[in-house]
Length: 405
Image: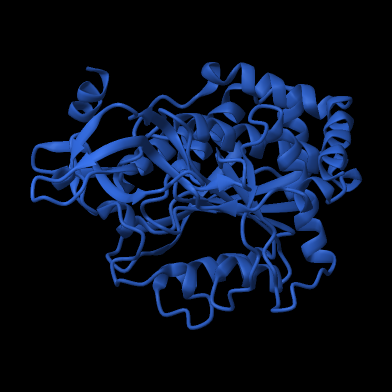
C-alpha cells in the first residue's frame, strides 16, 4: 500500500511544470556545472576565491558579507540572493569533511548566473531570498575533519554555543528568522535504503523539535518540503532515497532551529557506486534544491502532502564496499579450513605521497544478510587466513587479480 501511495504522488508531480523544470536541470547539468572544483578536498581559501568570482559576476543580484570568524580566524560568510518575502536559509560544511553540498551550492549559483533571464530564475529571486553560508566550519575543512579546530562537534553545540562558529549560525538564524532552512551534510556512503540493500544516495529528515516527535505547523511545512524533494529526486534515483532517524537530539542545530520556528530539512549526501568524489550526488543536491526553490516560489509546495516523505524507507547500515562470498579460508597452523564471506571496506588514506585507497577487513563469517557495492564469487577459491584477519589492510587490486585467476 505504501508503494502505491508513493507511486500516485510521483504520478501527480510528473503532471506539473515543476517536474519538467527538474528534468531540464538534470539533463542540462553539464552546461552549468561549476568546473572550478572537481575534488572534495578543497579548503577555505579556494572556496572564497570561487565565491568571490561568482558574486562579482552576479553583480547586484548577490551580496556576500562576512558574518564572523572561526576559532582560527578564517572568515565565515553569508551570501544573499533574491528579494522575495520567503527567506530560505542554507548552511553547509558544519562538519569540515562533508563538502558535497558545498560543491552543489557552487553549481546552483552558477546556474543562477547563466540563467538569470529565464522565467524560473526570475520567479525564484522575486519570491524568495536565499541566505547561504557555504562553509560554516572552515577550520575543519582545512584539516578535512568533522570537528572544529577546538575539537567540538558543532552540531552538538546548539545549546551551550561554546564555539564561535555555532554562535554565528545562531545569530544569522535569529537575525533573519527564515521560514525554511536546509541543513546540508554528508553521511557514510555505506548506508542503505530500508532492507533492500540499495545504497542511500541521499537521506532526508524533517527533524523533531521535542522528544515526543510531535507535528506543529513548522514541522509539517518541513515535511512538505522534504516530500517535494523526495518526489524530485525519485525521478532520477528511484529506490535510493532514505529517511534519517528522527529521534530528538536536544543539542543539535537542526532540532533546535525547527524548535525556534524555521522549517528545517536535513539533507545527507550518501554514496553512489564508483563515485568516491561524490560528483553525481553533488549534481542531485543542485537539482533538488533549485527544484524545491521553484516549487516554493510558485506556491506549488503548498499543494504537496507529506506522504512521499513519511513513507520513505529508513536508513540502515547493512552495506559494505566489497563482499567476497563463500571463499575457503585456510590456516597453516593446523586449524581446520572453513568457508566464509569476507567484508572489505575501502578507506581513503593521505600521507606525504598523496591520497590512496586501502582495503580493510571489517567482518567475516556468514554475511548472507548483508549487501555490498561489489560482490565477488569466492566459491572454489582459497585464501590464507593470516591475510584476512579482522582489521587487516589488504590490497584490493591485488586481491581482485587473484580472484580472477
